[in-house]
Image (cartoon, rainbow, N blue to C red; front, side, top):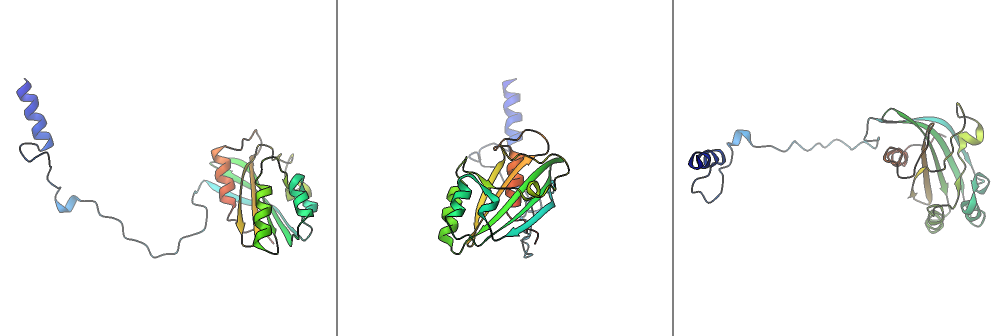
Amino acid sequence: MVLLVTAVIIAATGGGGDGGQTAAPPASSQAVAPPVSSAPVSSAPAAPSLTFEVRAGSGDQRCASHAFGDVQASLQQTSCVGVQRASYTAQVDGRAAAVTVAVVAFPDAAQASHFKEVADTPGSGGIIDVATEAGKWPGPAPQFDGAAYTSKIEGNGVRLVQAVWLPGPSTSDDPGLARAAKGALDLVLPS
């Protein structure tokens, strides 16, 4: 019985005196890498289950008046060139979310970098959602408490993004909200 099992194992693995090496499969069955495309890479969100629809947009040279907390105090002490804001409804795997985006511009990269440090500090305030300020949400305005947050430097500006579920509780570490916030980092804001 042991001899039969050993013979089956040797036959199945191709074993039998070749030092444990197995023969390569015939050339016709080897995997071939797909051809490399020379087409430009799209900057659109990678996930087809993530879509955005503009709810409101606005631009203003008065930055501090659209901010709160330490973010507002920081803007009162700097030479902010302007702030552009947009609000979106997003569909994340079929679930509705609210996304608020602000791009705050400065005369130089050093001021932008300092502002980003302030804005990235938890509990430091933020930029007021434009759709909330303008009454453009189709029901109760979302509360951005517990929002997923991300930011990035854009030249001499800083883009701040927050995302929350519509309706429902949100947490800053929710994977769906984090994906929505990250996807909004590259959205073109309405004029």
